[in-house]
Amino acid sequence: PVASASDSAVPRSGADDGGEFNKYHVDSQQLFSGPYTCELGAEISRHFGVDQSVCQRLCLSEARCKFFQYTKTNPASCSLLSACEQVGHSGIEVTNFLFGVIRGRKKVCRIANPDACWVQQKRRSELSPSPADPSVVP
Image: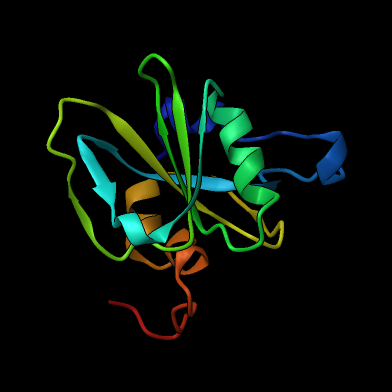
């Protein structure tokens, strides 16, 4: 069964996708939100006073950027990251949003159960430095 919220989010057509049913580009995938952060040594640059869409564009324009962390606090901050191999508590009461960048403008589809998709290596492999073997199911 498909949840109505999931069904209503399915792209029916679009000019940049050639009008294909349920096919679209995903530039990034949110991985977590909360008082967590990645290792400091992975930071490429930090920007203040930008919104999440600008933060994403900054990351996509930087070849080394694999992740970006956005914080809505005043002022909003955006960290471009080359890796995120260690996640830890930030030690302060702040909500960070970490996104993994999907390079290559690959078309994907919306599915009925995004959590199952993640487990079955769909978008997860796109965020990995070496994509998972699709013939191996965890």
